[in-house]
Length: 394
Image 1 (cartoon, rainbow, N blue to C red):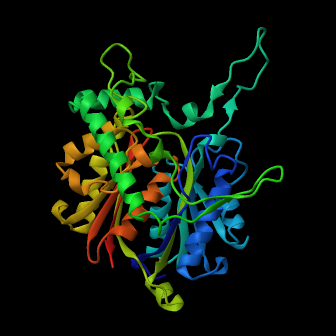
Image 2: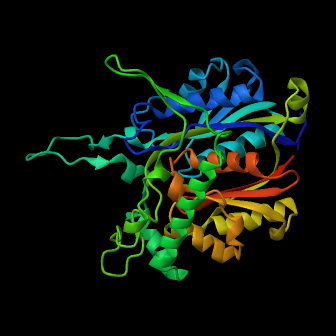
C-alpha cells in the first residue's frame, strides 16, 4: 500500500442556499446532495463509475431515510457498488467528510473520492417521544432545536452559549451588528460581481398542478436583510437587558448541499484533470461544550504546525459565521486581519445549512484563492469541537 500520497481538490459544486421554507424546501437533503455531486462530477470530467468512495455530511437525519449519503450518491448516478458513509459532526460534518476522504487517499485506500455535505432544515420533523399518549394531548419537540442547536450537556441553546462567548471576549451588540452588516454587504457585492456563479449548480424545482418548473440559480438569504431594522431587533436568547445576539447578527436556518471531488496524483494524471488546489493539512480540536464557538481558534494552530506554515502566510481565511460573535471571537483570539477573513461574506448573510457549511467554505477557498496562495477554512461544531483545513492553490 502506498502511503502519504498528495491529495488534490479537482472540482467543487454547490446548490444555491435556500431560505428556511423557501425555494429549495420541496427537496430532501439527499436530493440536494445528488445535485451537488452531479455538478462536481461533471466539472471534474469523470463519471460516477470512476469514484472509489463517498463521504457526505448530514446532521438532521430524522425522517431522511436510511443512509443519507448513499441516497445522495445513488441519486447522482454513482454505482451501487461504491461505498458511502454519512458523517455527523454537526456543523463540521461537510468539512470532516473532506478530511476523511483526504486521509483515505493519503493512505492509498482510494484514488477518487466524492466528499461534501447536505441539509434540508426546512424538512426537519417535529419529534414525539415514543410511549403512552398522555391525557390532555401531546407535546412536540422541534428536531432542529433538539439535534442541531442545543448543547446536550447543559441543555442550553447554542445562541445562549454564544452569549457567554460574547461576554468573555468583550463583543458588544454594536460590534456584532457591524460584523453582520459587513457580511451581508460583502455577500451582496460578491453576488453582484458573479463570484458565486462558478460555485453554484442550478436546482430545478418541479412545478405543481400544471405550473412550470422553477430553476433556482442564486442564494436566497442575503437578499432579505433590512439594515434599518437591524439595530432595533430584540435579543433572542438572553432577555434580561444584557443580550447581544439577534436574528440579524446570527446565521439563519437553511437548505443546501456542497460537493467536492478529490483525487490522488495518479488519478489526476489518469483522468487528465486540472486540480484547483492541494490539500495541505487538517485537524480537529475540542474545548468545553459550552465554548464550542471558539474551538476553531484551537484547531487552526494545529493545522499550521502540521503544515509548517506561518499564520502570516495565509492569504484568505474562511470561518463559518454560525453567529457574528463566533467570527469576531476567533478573529480576536487568533489576532487576524479582518480584511482577510470571509472577504465575500459568510453564513450570517448566505445562510448555514448545517451539514453543508464546512464543505462550502473549503470549496469557496479552492475556487477563489490566487495561484500559490494558502487558504484556511475553519468551522465550529456543537459539543465543543471544530475542524480546520488548509489548502494551497495551484
